[in-house]
Length: 84
Image (cartoon, rainbow, N blue to C red; front, top):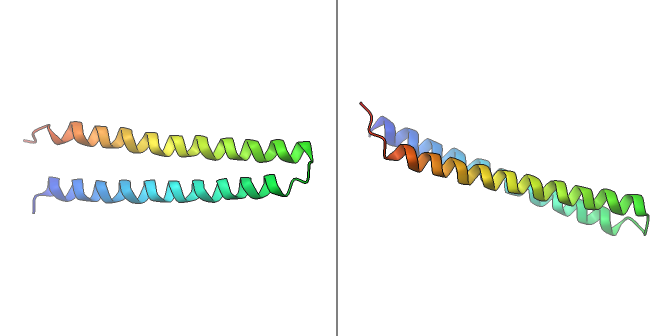
């Protein structure tokens, strides 16, 4: 087995695990924001806090997915580079 193949496989696995963990954490925070929203009881300050929590979770998801896309593009670009 070639060392470049081993490194590429490790990179793919780590990227998949990292993305999966990020998406799972985002799902938890979206659920918590939903619970905050439902439990607000009409309190304007709590409703705004829940909305801000939801926005933050979605921004975090966008960052995780963006990092995944960028890392995949870098991996694709480096795959074509010959090693000496």
